[in-house]
Length: 308
Image (cartoon, helix red, strand yellow):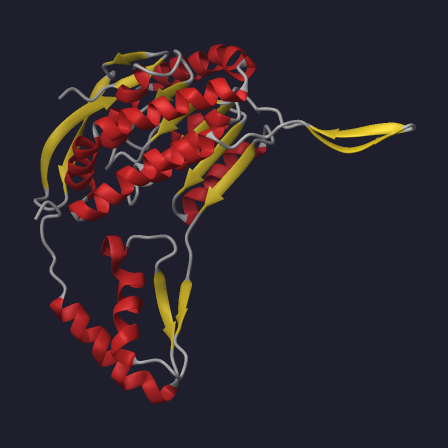
């Protein structure tokens, strides 16, 4: 399959290509289009041109588009899931869950309306609240949940009338490229654009004067750089960064019952989850038995190709 960029409704080849490695084998299994700065500019310009018409649609019209987008993902769910496992490595069952969750997110946010609301209407004045779309939103997603975290940015932004430029992580670009292919036959040109890079276009995207908001999920260090690049134009930012989440074990638990839950909270998706448990607080009386149960679960865990 040919994995291409999506610019102004067209699936296009990149200025160059990018190799994608299957983490189970460590070998290249696919290539995809890689954009240059000129193509990034084209994508941003397309989103800017598409914004007035998309924003002018009423919510029911945009909702219908998002539901059709979700249907398009569902129609190719098995393809999405296998591709996600091949490029990211997670077990196929977890990939399938991510795919179905992505379609569900499009439907959920597609149904969320923000109507004009009235706070006060009296003889001496009326106070109304009205939400308005910002313009072009840049979405930058990480490699650990490359599909659903991208869709969780796309869905609310499109539902509220914004247009987008989406940039996946260079190690997991294929599911976003496939998402762009599905969108190309459903969404109006320029509403959603997909740019793939090798981490060389991110700063140009986040600092661009025609980008009104950046939604970023990734490391804290990169999040700082995103904030710095948007400061000059006072861009709106949503930054979902690293965590140091704790699991708290109380003194009345059955260790054998709770240990698998703690283990899964830490190790699901190979432990690559921003809100995974990274430290455990436990009563001293349960410390040794809990450590042994967790160690047993770690020894018994199977590391293998996600397709198995």
